Image: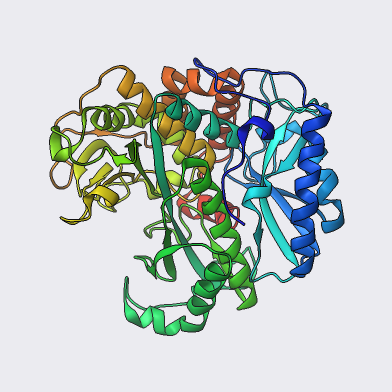
Length: 478
């Protein structure tokens, strides 16, 4: 089942210009009845397909996916009323320790986790299970201001208010290893060369089962291929709206993990899995559309951008230091975000430049109307995709509002050109994020404050740690 949730009855919020959700009235009995009625139909279909349990998840501010599950007979009630989830998860760290802010932390309070019935996926590799992304709501049904899925939806709605639409998608990279002790260095499942057919042959059955699972789940795969690091693969799927793209990124991870487990393997999406190696990126591709026209092509600005598209890309480039704390949220992220590894370690942009943090992609002549987009390369596999999506949209819209123009283009490797290095540590990224007014305004003080607190607490976990120690502590958390 695919589609986009109807925001009017899903979250009880509207976009608030200037940050954070605007509170509305509590959810009515009629709305709850509508949710329950829809859930009855969905539950009947799921039961007929052999589903016994539903997993509803969300991604916390450390980038870890958390979950609640329930039997299929409970779907009607959960759709209407949600399932309980403590707000303390807003300040969980990747190792399950807890920090706090003025709005979050401690044992008091509760939220309701409500599944998006339009995004339910029946797992092809976990028989009897279905998955759905969840929205975290207050107990009266109004928006929880720290729900990152709600934040991404608000930013998407803000773009729509201006007559703009986003088409987006994440590249998902992972390293697959032989199952073993979490305390031991992983033994990768394939030793073949980067991008090499040998690696496909070594893992042919595994990759075939992945493709079959994606197809059974109606997920439109564009490509699946070996990546640079030993045992590393990447999958890209067709673009969707912003929230849908983040949902799909999580569904991809669940599918990869499930297929890996059935083959006696483990998958890691962590920024770095093997110390000293190229890490797992979480590159975000976005294109800007108005009236079904892709504004990333056909314009009179550099490389065919329209004026609004240039402002959008310029806003992203301008906010890159603050965006780093959103898209590179782990101490391990900064073992990946280094020069000359195509990780996007510099605050610059360039046409088809894979070393720049922002890569402008025009596509082949003849298909640019559908394929032109911009790629944010500095994000990695630890990022919360909803927070990343919302933050990039907010930065891009700010660039349009301010009429920003792109700085001079970077041709080739930016190292040694005077280009500004992005934050090189989690502490520096947190500083940049805390100073970033556009993200603070878009997120609201609660979410912005929680992300800041989590980044600072994550940075404090590793004083004087070696790369090996950081990688070992984070390898199986993402």
